[in-house]
Amino acid sequence: MISNSCIKNFKNQFKIYHRLMNILLKFVRVD
Image (cartoon, rainbow, N blue to C red; front, side):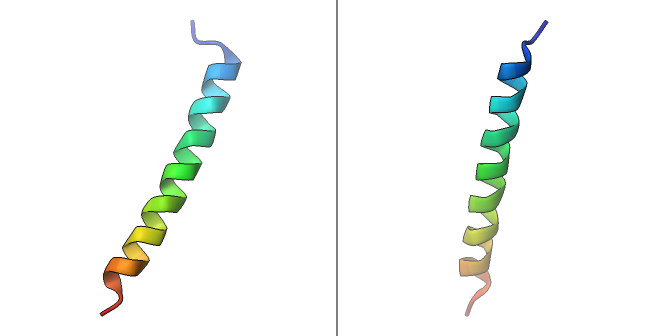
């Protein structure tokens, strides 16, 4: 079984990656 701390860390990392992807997409869309 996966410990709760591992799940929390994974969720936090996912949030950070999601934020970075959104920022990159904004830069790419700007012409």
